[in-house]
Image (cartoon, rainbow, N blue to C red; front, side):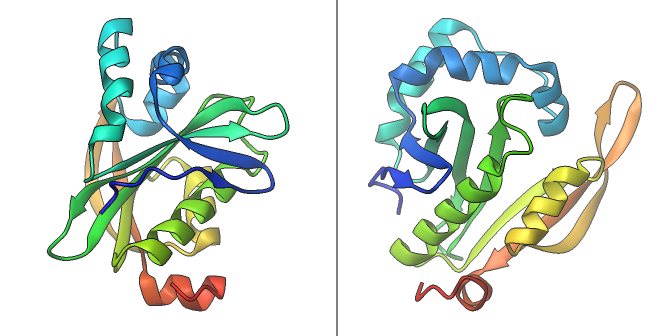
Length: 186
């Protein structure tokens, strides 16, 4: 479903297929303590595994990994991914990570999500795109709601971080909801 790896351009960001040129940025992103907390990620990734990972993204037709580049200088500011494809139910997962303070609060994430949803619903038969976000991440929950995701449930105490348990809020957007909200013909 995601065999083609497009470049998607918006006003603030350009999304490009993840490739070997993103290795250093990816390692820095997944090593950032705040990114790790917001995503619940425990491990880090070494340079060689990151090289292999970035080099193989183009080979996976069951996922779409895109690097987020900010305009006008086109600096790397994060990644956005459609993964966990369920071709039988025409659904997948969305995840996004922004690269620290230089990327937060500038509309990059909002625009990247809109670009990916537009692309997914216009070029694939997907019906549902879901995600999970930790309840303490109010900024992300606000953005997801703003672009059209609907809260649909809670996985209670899903994350244990620094001795505290946190709920994971489950959200999704459906094709017909996106079409109505965005004016898209998808």
